[in-house]
Amino acid sequence: MAQPPPDQNFYHPHPHPHAHPHPHPQLQLPPQFRNPFDLLFDERTGAINYNYIRPYIPNQLPKPDDLSDSLVMRRPRRTRTTFTSAQIAELEQHFLQGRYLTSSRLAELSAKLTLGTAQVKIWFKNRRRRHKIQSDQQKEFSCDGMPLSPSLSTTIKSEPQGSASSCGSNNSNGSTSSSSSSGGPPSLQSLSINGNGGSTPNPLTPSPTPTTPTTNLMDHYSEPAFNPYYYNNHHSTHHHHHQPPHHATLTHPYGCSAGATGGQYYPPPPPPSSLQHHHSQHQQQYHSPHPHQFQMEHKPHAAVIKEDPDYNFNNPYYMRMPPTAGSNPSGVTTVEPSSAMSPNSEVYEPLTPKNDDNSSLCNGAGGNVDVGDNLDETKAKLRVIVSSNANRTDDTCSNTNAIGNEGSGTPAINIMEECTGAFAKYQKMTTADPNDPNYQCTMDTIMHAYNNHRNTSANNQQFAYCFN
DNA sequence: ACCCTAATCCCTC
DNA sequence: GAGGGATTAGGGT
Figure 1 (cartoon, rainbow, N blue to C red):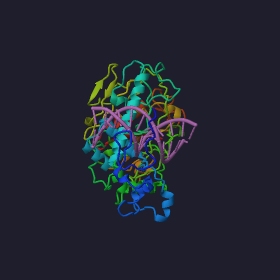
Figure 2 (figure 1 turned 30 degrees about the horizontal axis):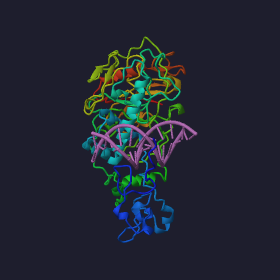
Figure 3 (figure 1 turned 180 degrees about the horizontal axis):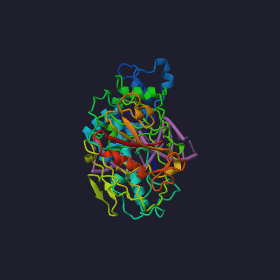
Figure 4 (figure 1 turned 90 degrees about the horizontal axis):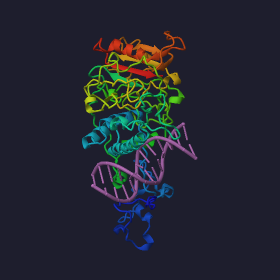
């Protein structure tokens, strides 16, 4: 039921815990003054109170001449924050580790992401909300009535309207197709092979943001000091930051991106348009300390899982088992994301049982993206790269200089495999010739590359694969 | 127009 | 004070 229209058009100096407004002592003015515009003026001095004027732009307070246009007197609404993909990835990562924030976690995250605590709190709140909705929908669409574990179902996205779930589809085990949400993991993953391969959170650096926007509007809007947060927000909307040449992005959900190296991002070239989320054009709002910040890529839904009895992703050949692996009733290996997954621990990927979308090599243990799905349809290119130097933070799939590291004398990234054809998780290669247009890079290709290097050298600390 | 989601409102605990 | 549910609204496709 629609709530009575709250007094949203005017700034309210304090929240009402109840629906009905009550008289305010400070508004007990002579009738001729008893209107919201009075709030514009200091009761005592009569001076213009700029704090009631929106938008609030630090150091850019409207001049008196501009007041006529600014006297909108709508309730101030904080400038909508557009999180960067890196920030979302980090938030998602933390969300997987715990849906609720402790004060210390909040402070840590906000500082690390250069976000206000309010933004982080709101994000978690909205994320929980989204999770609940998705979880409910997941239950509703669940074939076997077996709800996914909350953590794993976190990123399961419901089928779009008009689209049936994968129940009853050719997905033999009935698992639903997963797709990334905006918070979903990326199409590109990096795996930490060795201990410090990026799972260790960066030592927290003091936040450059001195003032955290709070939910207290009064505090917020009366903040007189320069606030980089808002500065960035407002200014970034008035000019376009340099867009990185690549869109897709991401970081490993477990924090490879947050490694001791300060982050590992492997930005592939722009993905096929079919893989680009409509939000992928978002501008960068914050000056990232990292040279690469990339846009989140959304996987198209409705993945059609192809059957192939020859693939068995439970084969330990592919991966060591995750340390905190458990089994769900159907015997599917799962991993409950936990702090045990990082930091300072190896990042293991749960093996993906055949036709199970919940998790895979291509996936964070959160199980929300299975990049193998449908990539044969998108004709994405694949590069499997192994970093031999975890200290490199700027190596990318598309950075051929970095990959080859030509000229630097210090090999940083070696391309172990590069498929020029499509990647097909459940298909066999139709040709062994990578130059053949019909060549399909399979999971085998990836894992061969991976296994060839995962244990051979202590220097091989990063493993990533990119879909270009 | 529609979608996603940050931000807000209102309420409960 | 923090949480959830409902809602609004910004910004993108």
